[in-house]
Length: 346
Image (tube, rainbow, N blue to C red; front, side, top):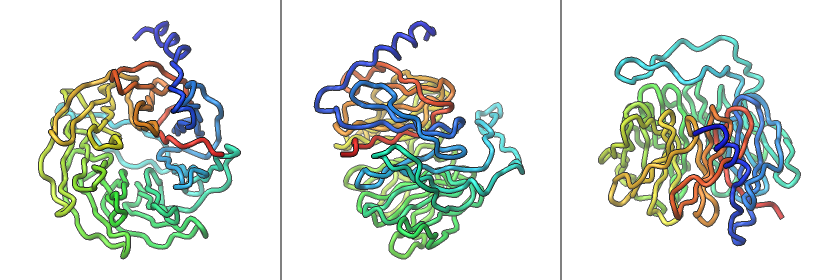
């Protein structure tokens, strides 16, 4: 796509329908250390909030008043090099990390200001917020653990040992379990949120990045980046059933499930697309071109629009899900990573 076309798209993002005029799209910018806040009504950035080093995963509190953002003092290394078979070549961790910068930043959405930083383990990347808003479940990539943090007092209540490079963290719809994906060996842990103990562990391989669930919680979907597939998991037994093959060149990263569970959206990293899947039929329906190396995804409250963070192109794609086409882009900060859609605070 030519620069002139990109400029035209960025300047002409169509206004959302009137019913949608009530939400913000928050985007974490890994390299610039801030969060871009975009108004869903007109697609314009309304604020930039500094939050700390290397922000990645971000999620709102259940009441929509607070935004939590994982920040990390570990240096950015960029995507790993690939061997001739497309597998990542892992390098030794660098020694210039800043542990004092690790934690979860707290942003007041009413004032759009950084408030404080909650403690976590080393190099927090992704996390989940409990339905009651009391706890955060935080993956600590550098030390292979999951931290359970109390929001009220800021204390880490429990540390759960998992495997190397935990990344994706998602709570099941009923809140009884939290799934944690581990990149290096491809393991997925299932942890009981009442006891904070693992109840299952299975392996999918291929650098699993994220997890999505059907609304009824009967199935989980785990993308494996280097294998170019999405694994279908039976959540009753916590066992893989099948793998959905994505188009050649896909390196699946983030996921977003439609509210009715009829569509699963998967960003494909270096392939520069978003795949549209039918979870029931377990097949790919469409592929939507977006920006460079898309990662985080966020759905509008009515499920009509999808927002996609494009890391190297420093922008956010806006996809109309009726036509399944990109209808515009909004400039973000440096290195957009995650997306969280939140209601405008009253």
